[in-house]
Length: 243
Image 1 (tube, rainbow, N blue to C red):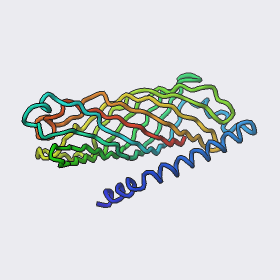
Image 2: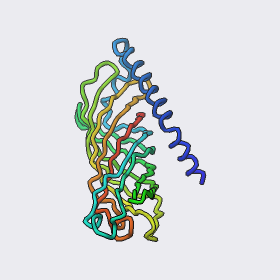
Image 3: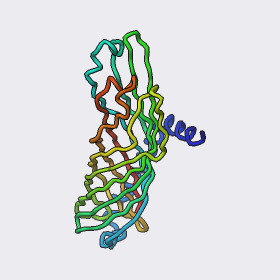
Image 4: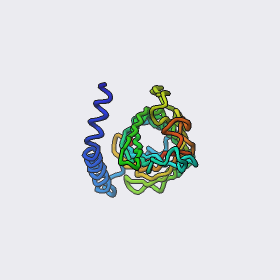
């Protein structure tokens, strides 16, 4: 109950949190730019083969659904539409970064992510059935990081790779009275960010886009799953990385 209450508070104030963190990023960036030509912080940081750190992330995600042939049968003629909606969540994790060349790294960021997905079933008699799916996922993004040349205390980069995930909570309903999803997922990821160098650490704000490539529809045979053929995840994540 404590965790649920904490998550509910985060969800209610998600816009304020994102705004505050965005201001923080702007402040960090402005400070880094101000010192670009004054001094070079951590000048030998990029010579290290292996570096570590931690991350905090805010994400917004949605299911992309594809109707099945059963959706147009008389059995489901009262179902007007099935509409997923965007929801917010957060992630916590670690960073392991290995330098291959001056401009190319391999990065592993094992993390725990908290999701709350929502799917709305609308009926022709104007009834609405809201399905809510909460999950705690252990994710293992494996990424290549391509970096630009460092200019002062700023360096831009792009990342891309795959993100396998498995559910950690292990709490599933098999009563057939709710929309069910699988306990694993696989996504393709791409994004960009900035490395900002400070005297004692490196801070990296990063925006990443994730596209699920496997069908996460768990039970296609219950009343909520039959009108659907496929469900994929789409996620946009804002990362705050400290190394």
